[in-house]
Length: 386
Ligand code: NAI
Image (cartoon, rainbow, N blue to C red; front, side, top):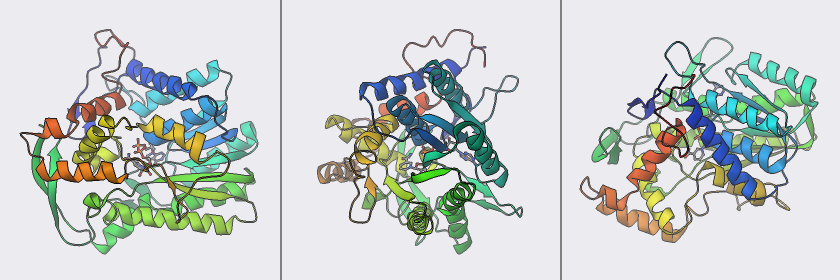
């Protein structure tokens, strides 16, 4: 069938299999262009099918010749419905990895569940022996607990009602968005979903099963951002979850010290992904950020970020961290000259000038490409098998 994008708000309900494959190929070509990194050779990526997790898996496999096991939650195609992009990305990744003689298996299921943890452990025991790097890159809307309780994450403030300019993704106009403060229960639920508890559970389960190498490394991804987005991000519910995640890095380091495990938080750059498109206010900030960083020649996407993380910051001579022990992949984003220009543009931006002050086209290009649309070398008029 011919697959076209069907965009509803911040989500596209179709994905193009050939476009997704092309997107994976492009990321592999980029990673290879950087030359080898010194990443460990047996890698588990939790949240491996899109965004930062997929880029990490590509950096490990095609920059570090690592065998990779990936975990994701994606849907297969059924009838006229295409699969989700992460499903196509994973198929393509496995194909490219196998062509190079690299082990690449993927487990599609709920990473929060005990069942999937057990399946992963069995697969490691059978195929890999042990793993020496665990990347935790989940971005999930909900988490079902073993007792049947379901926690739902929310994207709200934690203080007052917050009113700010926002990009209306339906028509690229600037509107005011008001974000309600979360209740205590909602903050708690968001921490349960996007905080560090499940990361910790994974590491303890892997350790108990004896499938972590001595001196294994684990890294989870976080975001801080500028003061401009603090009310919705860092001081919002998602920020509360990220602070919770940061505290679990310390807990993993403490509880798995005897096994020599090192846990890191990498604070990544703000980028358009399926997860981040859903956050109010943030897409406008990203579109202005893209514009400023592109003009300065320092813009990066997921793959450029992960290329630099794997080559320079995490597996260089020693991991490069700030005073709080965080790896700062947001170093270019947070540069004062970048943020000063963003503040300036933010104060001025209206519907009339948004195309000049923000990289709206770049935002949408990234958005469509996540679903395999708008890629070079793909014939979108051709019939494809979904
Ligand atoms: P994404 O939406 O592209 O990827 C999420 C991944 O998690 C996918 O592989 C998906 O299949 C998997 N997943 C979701 N629920 C799952 C479940 N229940 N079981 C198994 N797998 C599941 O998101 P993105 O943006 O790459 O986010 C990854 C991490 O990076 C998150 O922790 C996010 O907060 C962080 N981050 C994102 C930034 C951004 O601007 N996009 C910036 C800095 C950090």
